[in-house]
Image 1 (cartoon, rainbow, N blue to C red):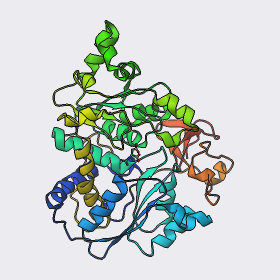
Image 2: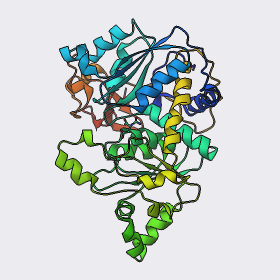
Image 3: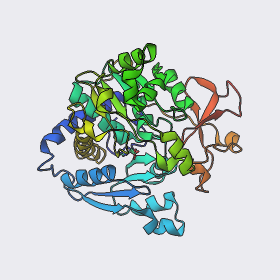
Image 4: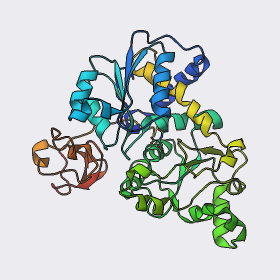
Length: 404
Ligand code: NCD
């Protein structure tokens, strides 16, 4: 299936081969990124941001301008009719008459799916609450491919706030699809949600090892030297296995109170001492912005590639825009055995679901009143259904064997 006209709401929306074809196009875009490639002359991109952003919005806007297109932008939605109570559905139906594509960032989970459902132009999710951030994952995978020469057989550690970090939610699946060995390291209370772990195993046979202890050790690098025995051995052995260490900040804006945030963030930091145990060619990655989880002293280390990673956002987003707008052919190769390919989502009969409400308080369906309940069947599990917007899984009120 061609990429032209498609939405990118979730990392599940593109097949493995489509992701790779997009990266081939990004390689070509990278060669032209200084002079640009005027293929989207006359097209307009709207960036609709209800949450702060530097890299994502600016790199999308720069990418569109490099392609010769124009940009209209809502950088602070509180200055628009949203402040008067306009819904996402109405907002995107207005924007589609001015723009050929919409990139949306919104604090509610499932909001980008709503935008995609209501807009007739392609919609790209630039982050919907703690749910997903698929274009960050594209540029993360692209970075690994460029720096490591491929995406197969990698060992990657995801470190930090794995509970609320949307980048790592999308990335864990992106990595698992290409067969990576994934290790999760998070402070207590900020572990990856169990439903995501179950899905990783169910759909991709990926069972990440999980640690807090490495987190404890990296918290206080002096203690690495003091500590003896198995804990230290475990941490150093582990660090030596990673091709990439992907660090994230604690997502302050998702906590209910500042106290809860302060308690959760209490010290973990990657320092030069910690990196002493890592491979000589390991990549230290971060979606940025950083707070204090990556010491500035690391910036000089050749393994610290987070600024280069952010720079790759430009060719990747140029490729994505050109592909979705149909301005550049994307050569998608035939799928290999075991490749991931999106499948149609089977919805549960609406009448049977009418009583079911998504239990996630941050799901868009609990904030935008016109949205009815919509649930899809969960692959390989008969007694669960998932919210069609935020993907929260709930027991099926129809019981097991309810499909059909
Ligand atoms: C990330 C985000 O917005 O989720 N930032 C980004 O897009 N590069 C990561 C973060 O804010 O921590």
